[in-house]
Image 1 (cartoon, rainbow, N blue to C red):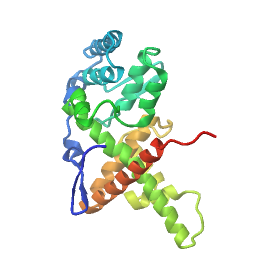
Image 2 (image 1 turned 90 degrees about the vertical axis):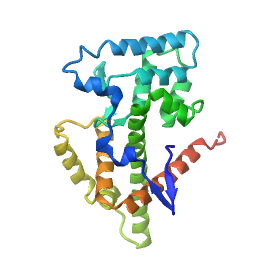
Image 3 (image 1 turned 135 degrees about the vertical axis):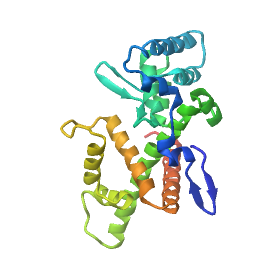
Image 4 (image 1 turned 180 degrees about the vertical axis):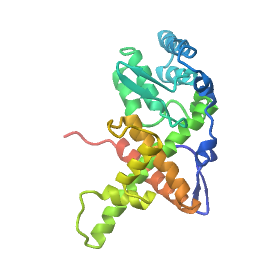
Length: 263
């Protein structure tokens, strides 16, 4: 979990997350500035070659994976018709998507169960602490990782919290059940129902409304909502909501790690 400062019961969002528009991902600056892909294509095989070489020499695969991420330059690519978008809205690094792409490239070299455990845990490897993780990624990618952590992962948890609170509100007041608590809970978080916010997002980001949103599009929508929420409410409320999301995520992670008896 990224570090946060707590004073007088208030969580302060790291500046790299609060001042999103000022975050530059230096590792990818050359990619942005190139007119085409020809200038950046050679960097990708080098990174993959480095990954394969480390694995072949017996290096721990998790460490090899993170070191390769630090060398990675592409913000997105298409493989076998699937689009991989690693940098959302130019600011948030979806590191687990890149991990999935790299693991699939060396299919069979990494134990399947270990790879799946990493990809579905949504946490940095247990063999690596936060400082080591930052050193592997480099400062720019780590800032982008933090943006993703707060802007996508925690934002999704906060949406869950808001929906749970809305449901409790209905039950406490004996209100009739509704099939769509999401619309109401989004209204509380972002000032508009989800359906309206989605239209605003598609218009602002110039996404074709006739095309079904991809998983990366939905993650970008979540990140866009995060930025809207920070700009919409005062810092005290933003900090309070962040604290709620952190507590709920810790509960979810605890429940996930608690062993259950077999039937």
